[in-house]
Length: 622
View 1: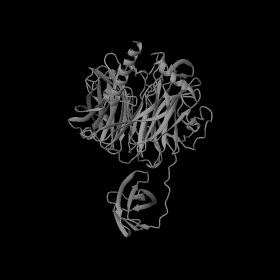
View 2: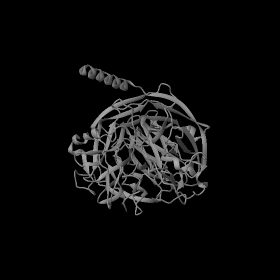
View 3: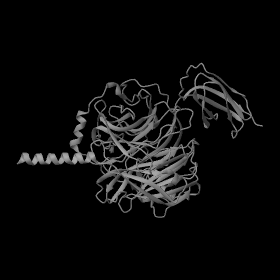
């Protein structure tokens, strides 16, 4: 009897697993009305905030299951060369690259004593305008770190909707769209199925101090009496992509992770309604409902879309990640959501929280969801935390590169013995789009230091540099909220797309003397990367130089080729970018420089996307 019952149970489990594996994502169309607007420069000052804003985090499936934590005892040791110890914190395990990171312009965000965790998020435009937000606050800066508003504003003041109260806002996200030259802001409201809203704001011009329009989407997207939590965002050439987790109300048990494809043109135009497509019923490598899907923003200036890429892991422990592709735009009925698991080294949720200097109070790091992603050159870059055999039970950062075309994957681990590394954020870090170089920023703490912010660069061979301190911790953190203080939940990072050298901005939290979270914005740069020059028997020159308006490219090309001319200001801003096919032989291609002011400019000439000439030209006034 026991054998028959056991067999029946096994068959049932197999059947359930098979059904889960055969589940297909489901798409639904929807729209949300325009709900409010503001002009940032005209926002009124805030009223004093006396409420404590601490957003409890619901549990994800199995994340604190002690049986699953046993995986940590058998974490395999990948190739020794895949481990890199932060030489400025720990020992000197493996040689690092000669990265020359420089911490430049900086801004100290107001020390907000009324809330935790900070949830740092930021974006920077090609004009050097910065939008930075934490839980319940938003600030505006220029590229020197100077505030554009005297003080940060409440998010509720920014949204300017009388139905939205400050006390129920959480999980802000902001992103800059380099194709449209606009900003997008996303924030959550309400933690029940009846109150939950996804609020999306679009800057109406490239100036974030100008007009914004806001839309409210229902948080109970699938009608299952759920609320929406932990959004992540990305933009393609045509769309805004939002992911997040649904939790049942009032139990707060996990439901599923969903994807929302938004027609960003509606928001930029301030249309009466914002059109979108919802994807639900999404599974991961295990066949279970996916958790904490993360969409990949575009790390380069190249086109991105209509396909969009996403990734998730399977907490608390697995040896697989799951890659996702949405194959077309929100309004294309034939679009599919494709799911492709791939193998990695075994990872696990950390079993102990992070120590701090000067206190027994711990910092909560017991989640290992994927925290940061970007896409460039056919590679999906990702980062999360895991304990390792090399660094011990403390959390190290797993940074990986997944080749979308071939399915090849490589992962390295950045950490230090006895130090907890957490809440990583990554972005492309080169002035050359074709180079796969990454900036990784992260938070770190242990019993000998206060919580601080650091950064490393990771070169094309996946070797990290020694770290730089972005902001040193000044004190331990204690809100007296729980046995382990909330930390993170995420760190902000943004590439400055038009910089003529590697440049990214980071925004993270550190321990302040008040024993609260301080928040810090910093610019990080490095020496400009140079393209390898190629030898050609082609002959060419530009004339006339100086010129009043027209510039001729006189070329004798040995084969028919695509020639691209880029014109930069002396500060590195791309002003013109033109491509033309020129047949084999001798030809003159004329460029009209009307619209450019009299000045000196840098021009770059490419043949078949390979740079082989840079020159200075002078445009004269009439």
